[in-house]
Structures are given as structure tokens and as C-alpha cells.
Length: 226
Image (cartoon, rainbow, N blue to C red; front, side, top):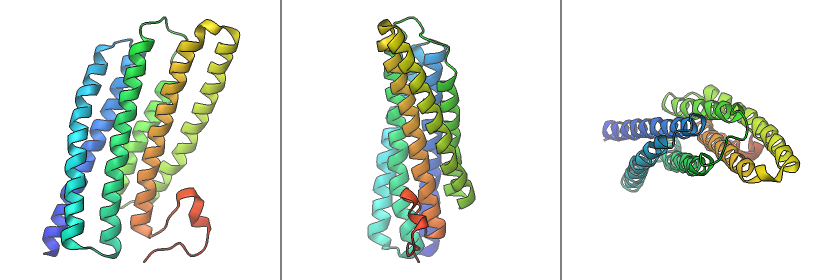
């Protein structure tokens, strides 16, 4: 019985890995569509989204079934609840990539406002955060998860810098407002992707150490879980 349960957990983890791979690919394609000014790439993003949506439902159903049938306790309970949360976070990452693609399609109808450096940089960091957070989950690596959480600060910093730069464009020339706002929205989409990767990493730390670090709760006494 225990062996069968472990096999089912392993299967869930493998499908989360596949889901994370698709999410990373969607981010890459959406940013490439923007940078290369190639709207055709957005169609691939929309196609992958369908696969992500299907696997999200499958993972959720199987995780809920295991919760109901096995009624796990302690660490296994934390693991299955984390699977449900990670499943949701990865689906939202895919949604953000779709948002980027949709905004890119509008932007590509206009002349390029500025060289795109910060946004591809943010995307690269966010993709690595997704990859590392899932790797930390599969390999029970809280140290890697902590590293992902620290990377979120870097994404936030770039997002803030880009916002200030684009605000300057809009103040100097109102004709740039539509394009500048679109880039701000894409930057925020990437910032939210990084937040979702951070959520996954926080779940890993909770699973492995029984410690809740959301909102710096780890700094407060009495928050260790058996």
C-alpha cells in the first residue's frame, strides 16, 4: 500500500515537471515574439496553454483522490497539499505568459519604443526561478528553494527600474503612453511569474522543514510544523 502511494506521488511530481517545462517554454516564446517582432510565435503559446490547462485538471483530480483515499498525515499531507498549490501556481504562470503574448500582439502593431533589454533579462531570471523551484520540489532541496526566494528581489528591482524609465518616456512624450503602458504590463506579468516561482519554493521549504516563511513568518516564534 505504501509503495503504491509513493509511486503515485512520483507520478504527480513527474507531471508537475512537465507542466513547469511547458510554462517555461510559454514564457520563452512570448518574449521571443516581442523581441523578434514575430506574432506567429504567440500561436504556439496559446497551443501550449491548452496542454497546461488539461494537465492542471488531471493533477488536481489525482491529488484530491489521494487525499480522500489515503488520508495522509504529517509530511505526506503537506506534500499533497503542496502539489495542489504548485499545480495552481504553474497554471497561473501559463496565464501570465498568455497575457504577455496578447499584449505583444498589440505592441507589434506599433514602432518599437525602446531597445528591449530589461524585459528579456527579467524573463530569463523568472524562467530559471520556475525551473529551480520545481527542481527543489522534486529533489527535496530547501537550500535551492531559498535561492529562488532571494532571486525574487532581483526581479522586483528590475521591474521598479523599468517602471521609472517608462514613466519618463510617457512624461516627455504622450505619444509613447500606449506602448509604455504595454511594456509596464509585460514587466508586471514577469514579476508575477517570479512571485509564483517564489510561492512554489516557499511550499518546498514548508514540506521539507515544516517552516512557513511566507510574509517572513519564519522570524516569528512557534511556527514549526511536525
